[in-house]
Amino acid sequence: MTQNTAHTTATPRPGNGDVLAVASQTGATVTFFDATDHRRLGVLEVPGEPHELCFDPVRRRLYATVTYRSGYYHAHTGQAHELVVIDADRRRIVDVLDLSPERAPHGIALDPSGDLLWVSVEGHGTREGALLALDADSLAPVRRVPVAAPGPHWFALGPDGGRAYTANKEATFLSSVATDGTGPVGRIPVPGSEGIAVSRDGRYVYAAAPKGDFGVPGAVPGAGVRVVDAASGAVLRTHRTDGFVFPVHVTSTDLVLAGELRMPAGGPGLGGQAPGLLHVYGPDGSERGSVEVGAFPLTITSSPDGRHAYVAAVTSSTVTVVDLARTAPVATLHVDRTGEAGAHGLAYVPAPGA
Image (tube, rainbow, N blue to C red; front, side):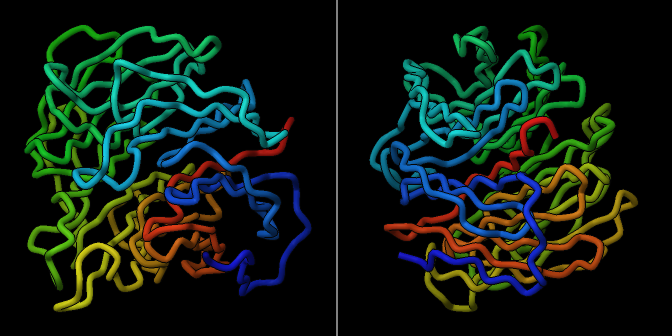
């Protein structure tokens, strides 16, 4: 088990009611921290193993996807099919939905309209991977949008919700689909990909590639974040990194954040990572700086005002809080785990009425 404390390098400020929720993959828990002074507020046990989180500000719900029975992509004991519904203010489970016949729900996002909840699901049998739309009120399935790839792990919605882009680990392309289910699947040539995000104006898609390989030590040829023109599908440039990038995130101030995985030369595979790096890029593509974070950064989110980034690292089971104006860490939050995989999904929960 890890520590139950938050290590803070800046003077704590009084809390304003905002909360950071963190899923622990092997916890299996969601831990709640005060987003201002970083105090641990409570821990909720959830069905294992939770991966990603999403907050619905209208209904004040948190959603946690349960992806595998144990393990991770391509190394698990079976695909799960549950979605955990949590009262974000009372911090208790209100429902556990069975998404069968779908399998391995992972990425999750609320449509900009607030009417639909989208979940990525893996293919199985004769069914290809897809994006599943749920009615945000009833959580009943509304439509299934195939993406022409078996493993759409992460995905991102365009600013108007009319188009979605999936990162496909095993396919040599990103999928671009109309969320109403019409039209063909667009294919943007990119080697097997990891995290993905869309600029707030919808002009650019940011995709981490190539797919992570835990057996590759040292520098990785071609690693980084591809910057794609959303209209043409052309790769405009790449933000180069030495190691594999997993999470990608765009803040409310248009910064692009990328989490780089670092492996010690000649070291072991999964579980042997060195501390990772958070790279911060400006809207013009310039790198503003980088910050050392926990081992194996896997998820990134940011505060609504764009002042702080939160980087969950699954191997160290920590969340690094980063002041983006100074490009400097201000706190490290510790999340409980019972195996090698800890802190994973993140959701920022503004106070009621904020």
